Length: 292
Image (tube, rainbow, N blue to C red):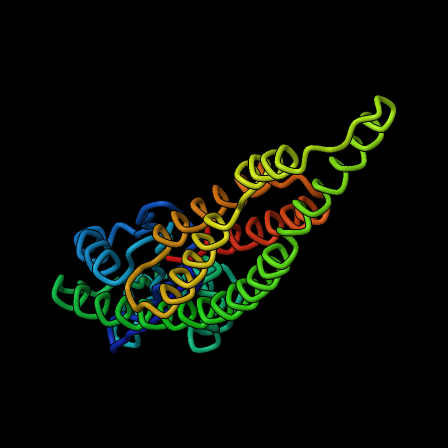
């Protein structure tokens, strides 16, 4: 399982060109790629996009390329005639006694056209080869960081799933307390009302009311389904394929079961635990938003 958050860089160079590519990604519903590419690399932008899409299923990925010329990426041209003319002019104007005394700094101070640096033409094949090599390294490093972040998320979610199971187990243990408390309240109220009239409580009627209440407040099915979703979610965390959307669906289903528990729960001990369940589910949902 991988996070959608990560960073990776790659570099490739030869004597003509030194290329560095940086990639950073954040969470997104889709695979959105934003390229910041110098004009020299326009021809290879589509190939970079294909490489990224082939490796990453989801995330907003920003790709930036920087470069500099290598040791043989530039040529220096000296205008010897202009250098000599500048030296003669400086001697003629009395600044120096001879041309040999004129330093290079004085020549360049008079004219910066004596020297020129030109970029050596770099072939498209060279650009493509270095760019693809740097991109492969950047993607590899990005995937490593996303995998590391994903493992941290998995451990956090697994711990929270255990908390959810503990809370649901407590709800399951106390669900019968609701009926017991209801039956006791019902008997007290009927006793108070009927004793004043000199009548006795109809036991069958009480049992009937308790049965109706039991049907309305029974959350056994919700507890079973919630537990099933927890198992599915835990198993999904170990999948190697992108799982973010599946996890998001499971969390929605778990929230639905919890909401039903809350609406049926007629006891404070249950409603308090339902609130705790919702809090933990929200924390898991926030983590899932970062999972690919």
